[in-house]
Amino acid sequence: MTDLQDAKSVVRTFYDSLDGAAPENCVRVMTDHCAQDLIWKGFHPFGEIRGPGPVAERFWAPLKAALTSMQRRLDLFFAGYNRIDDGRTVWVGTMGHLMGLLDSAWLGIRATEKIAMLRYAAFHRVEGDRIAETAMFFDIPHLMIQAGMDPFPPQTGAHLIQPGPMTHDGLLFDPQPMEEGEATQAAIDAMIQDIASWSGGRTEPLVEELRRGWNEDMIWWGPAGIGATYTIPRYARQHSGPFRKAFGTRRFNGHVASISEGHFGGFFGWPNLTLTHGGGFMGMPANGQEADMRVIDMYRREADRLTENWVFIDLLHFWNLQGLDVLGRTTGFRVDEEIR
Image (tube, rainbow, N blue to C red):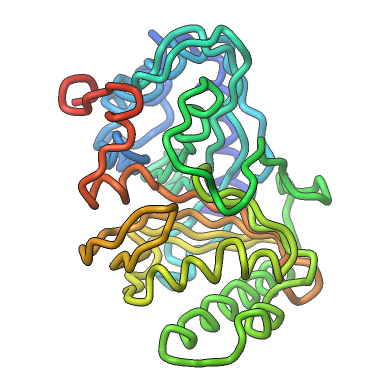
């Protein structure tokens, strides 16, 4: 089994090579550091791509050509044994922004020639000295907003350039005490169990449920279109409550990976949830149609509760399944013609 520190070294070396590569060299870098049968899961319009070459050609080279002088600004970096498969696989979780100058159009998002930041989170499954699987989720609507192309109606929270942890200690390059990671995983699992029991019909006030798993000054850093919200009462009012009301019928599909190290942890699914929209979410009407929601959640624990949560939801994919091509109607981008 790959050691956590060895896995971290593989990802850090990959990042160093990729971040310094010109667009035309991305295929070589991906091939050097990733398995030949790499599985890469990305947000709409990319979806799942197989092989390092196609990932470089469809995603990294065009992005680097558009977002010039790109640099990676890391906020979280940690590793863990995947509890979903009883620890048989090792994953490295990272989060931050890809920052550069938006000098050319990307996905129809117009060039601004100004600084722009693509918020992202990624999980990498490491086998030996190679990355075998990646889930990379990135907030395309937020980049659209930076280019003056807001695709959504007014949101319930406030969306900002989202900072890393308040404690500025999210880069876990060195080994961490095992018991700290176990405590973080326990806090995440307890919170998820509370949500599951609510969907089974529990009727206690939402803020009372939330106070079992969250510190009072918790921050939920949501995606563009929903926004961020601060403190338990405001989170209940500005996101959790409206979300549960809009999606009274929902099915949990499980996660692909869930890891924790130190005071940080996270998970992703493909998809995590299947939801039936009852109306009102993001100002959209009900249509009674099921749709999948792909999510990455990153967490910081403080004492025995969670206190910060960074959330990546593929809203473009979700609404596309509902028959609304948000990207196409806003930018004119056509997936079939320009990605595949």
